[in-house]
Length: 303
Image 1: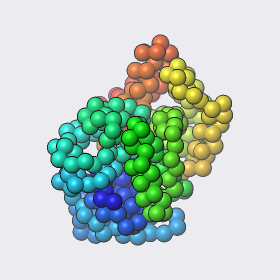
Image 2: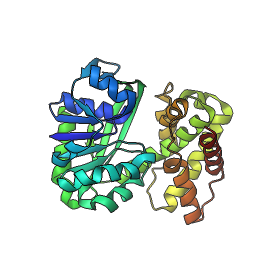
Image 3: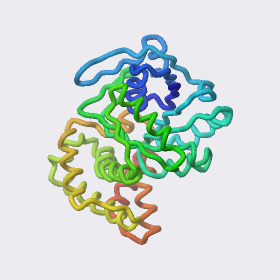
């Protein structure tokens, strides 16, 4: 399979690296020093079990999309709209389908509007990884990716993608409730990502600090209320699951905290902003999320 990774960060670099290792032809699109290092030395991937260098095509150009089978779309949600404009001419020239593994549940709508529902697939990546330094992605713990169809015409191709992931050594699970899985991940993310970015705390530090722990529980309660009001089925032990999962990645710095520490734009709108907007739309109060949203907006404006 010919694959183009748009957004070679912690997620795109990791899964793209595995797909390349599995024998697929993978082009990695990146920029800045990260791109420069990969061009010279390759992409270094480190897991708890092994470490290897990916030698592939690394570029800041989008040409290869025009004859690709799959675009792995893993840019930050803050860059979705601008990146779509960059890749559109090349998507229009070919027949590639696009699989988003982004955080949140609202990027699909933007992609579908531009490329049509038949060409847009979605997935949810359950992974703890980070770009430790330019050209080096480090992953901890287990990994899994859930993928599913947004349109019945995608079934055969989704199975091909699943097979490509599995043959590359990635735990890939097909689901007919992919948006439910994305909501599950969103609930975890909104519980820990924004709070960690405000406090500069790891997941474990949030769990261990009485006040931060209480705040995390309040955030999750508000987020679940939004999910229920949106018609999303929530398992009765969802709260317990989320905090048990969090305890297994105690040393993890969330992606929003990583972005804040590196001075990069944080995914405030796709996490906090999404729930604030949904709260207004559904007339569901989310006072704690709204407060954290205000703090993050100030922090980002201040720089």
